[in-house]
Image (cartoon, rainbow, N blue to C red; front, side, top):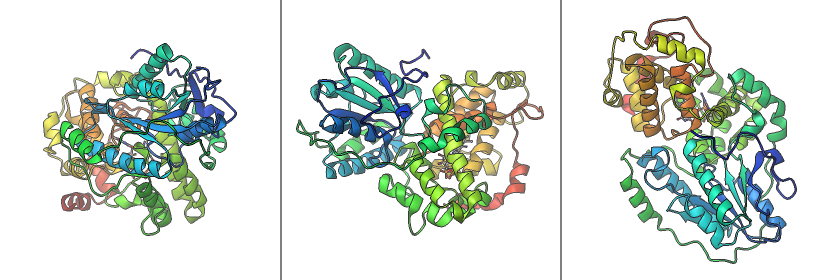
Length: 483
Ligand code: FAD
């Protein structure tokens, strides 16, 4: 992929009216930064689909407030082919979340523009309202970067006075501030992130008050009709019902008084998180984090407040939430081939190539794998957990992907099948953590070399016997069958 204008080298953001840390903001196009143009500020919401605890929205509101200008929020629905091949499962969740967000925005007199024609409609919206600044949030994934590049290019040509800023509202430590390069492992990344953590892991301020919106109002959205249309155009992977979208539901999952992760379940995280028969030992926050319905920073702040309840559990949770999750963004940001064998480290490419022609005991087609038709009941159960529940247990994801390496004709095919299935069925799929999870399992990414063996070469191996030693395999299979 050619380099995008969203270059890895940070262009420091503006200090002054923004409540966001200056290093969280990058100026993608200078414009005249609102100088002499009191036009509104438009926040182009991409992956941080929430109004609370959102540094991009805070930054946009800070700029608007400083020039007594109004603020609008825009979301552009990627048209078919949907962003990263979203299926009905993910699109339904996204739209139901946006519907709630639109209602919350209306209650705060914040205009919310839903653009069904895709990101190409953003420049027209900006021009139509004479905006001074466009603020976008951040994703390291190629199609989102390409869409942002196109918008920056379009505005640079036709509305050069409009400033374009980007804010990393997804990561606790902004990706470009955490490290200026591709990190080799969690160890190297952790030490960099820890050094600057206190600077970024701070409470969120109130949203600055902005001038009332005095322009053309957004069109009313017929959410039912939109959802019917979009879902009928998408591949039919049914929606799930155990996870309600939106900010309120996400906060309930984190802090609910009945069954919230931090309020009721955190204590068992340390001991039980690798036991797939106890899925509620995990936070189950990944769909909310993926769609940005909750901020990782909010989860981290609340976890730290409760560290006394179970220091080991909280520390392990923060390790996954911050180090592992943000390492995935680091990889996808600095490695354009984040979802292919060519993005693997050299030692891993070599060992996989050395063993690419090894005889496989079982070879399954993508269809057989998708339909859970293998000889291994444990693997089949994990596949069915993902297909029907929309979220496979974290421990099983590793076993699942490693067996795909063992049972397909070569590492490229294994990686592409794993990513295809992960993105199709996981509610939290189509995410940097998904690409990195598949790359870790199949291509040894962020891992070390292990004892060489057939097919895997030096890639870490996992087997059924190992799972049997770790947890009650039959109980997991029965649990998946029951649910
Ligand atoms: P918890 O254990 O409660 O963790 C809290 C949060 O930390 C998670 O929500 C997630 O944001 C982050 N996290 C936890 N483990 C990891 C990890 N290994 N890498 C990066 N971040 C992590 N995660 C996704 O969000 N989307 C995916 O599509 C995805 N696909 C994966 C595929 C494979 C093959 C593997 C090995 C891992 C994958 N992961 C993915 C990472 C991890 O398995 C999930 O984030 C986790 O299972 C989500 O459940 P939870 O929220 O209950 O996790």
